[in-house]
Amino acid sequence: MEKTYCKIVLVAHMGAGIATPAFCAKRAFERQGHTVFLFTPNMWSELFDEAGTFDATSLSRFFEVQRPDCLMLAEGIGACGLDAAASRGVAVGMLAAARSEAEASVAKSSGAPFDFAIMISGRSLRLEEVDGFDGVVGACAPAVDAAYSSTPIANLVAFGPGIMCLQDATPARVAFFDKLVADGRFGGAVRCFGAGWPERFASDSTFTHIAYSARSSAACVVFGDLDKGVQNANAPADARDVKSPADALLTDEALVLVRADGAKLACVGEGLSPWRAERMDICEKDITEAHEALIAAVADQQSSDAAFESRRLPVDSQGPFLDGSLLAALESVREQLSERGLMAGLPAPRTIVSVLGYVGMGNFGDEYILATVDRRLRELIRGCSIVAVGENPLHTLRERGIYSITLQDKRVLDRVLAASSAALVIAGLLFDQGIRWSIGKAELASSMPHTDIAGIAAYVELAYMNDARPVLYGIGAGPLDVATAARLCASWGVWARCSSRATKRLLSSSARAGCATSR
Image (cartoon, rainbow, N blue to C red):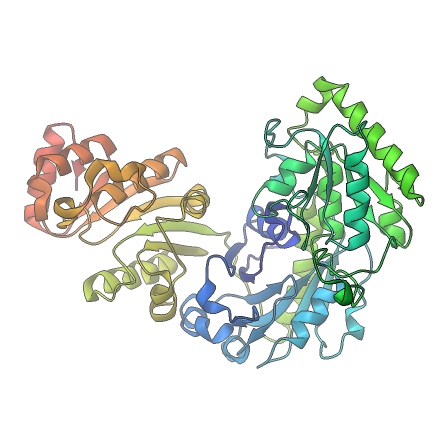
């Protein structure tokens, strides 16, 4: 049976960094050959309102041009204008790691009903009981994804021995850790990643911090029914006990990752679901007994340095992985929706081409070339998508219907190039006047590179490091006769396609000097 690959638009907070279930799903989807276009408030703040609702109408042009198979909302994000997707044949769905996330996405969304939901949970979320949801459901059990399991992470200086917590702060929880730290026998750090923690315990949950902490912590504390306070431990006394903490970071998937990373799961109190209770390594109803268990766990960790320092990969990295069950859930949803003409998919896996250019600024020539390259690559290569690297991603998204990033976001650029088959430099950048006004080679180390000569140099160098072959599409001779530009070409050793005789002559002369080859 021929395998089918999907183009997925994923909207998420990524609140737990690489330990977020949505991030695990993204890695697993991509590893299986699917294409994922990620939209987060951090990267695309203009597409979210103050309440965190995503504006799907901003992707109208993107839906028309790229024709993705589905729009998937995660982590309880809502979206307005979902009819912009539905009217263009894009299935509307959600990725839920908790029932509360599904309820929030449905309640906060408008414009079109949800066609599907994919669950990553150790329990049935009973989505058929969620008001306003009448779509198909695909379910998969929490597990470490293959990409996560093969990523070495360790930082024994910034993340030394100690304990961690993924839940939100309440007065009782803060008091629990205060009493633990006050005990002179406790020799570790306390790192809390939820909301409302005082500075002495609070840790940043973004990017890799939870994974670093999990691979260096003796235990991850999971509070049961210890209390029913509010999220913010610093709230006024009369505001406390208004509602229970949201504990948004404490998902079944996150617990699986933390436990695989070597941290014991330690329950304090009662009230956990049967699935979570079965996976606890330490269970103490009494606070004093819980303190003793945690002190002993940290002491054991510190007495076995060799075992501690070897925790650079998850301990159960042999699988089973999330990839298989998630793929089965997606395929189940796709088969059911294909009967309605949705999520047809493609018979070819993803191919990504990164395209650097002075785009997003409204220049007719640059914009026309970008749109033409995008269209022709999609026509010639099944499953191909481009990621533009330009000056104004929002303009490129809304006007050209092309996903875009900037050179400034080096972390994202690195991930894009790592997934790219080629790194294309388009239009007249190499031969433009940028060489005359940029800060030159110093921009290679600058935190604000632009798409001029120095920016191209940084882009091409990073492409080489990610095994993405750089290709220069040159238009116009410009100042290639400038010695600095020629030397840059020599350092790249790239292939260029020329559209003018003057450019070809200049490149040919550079080639004879060992600078480049022309064609």
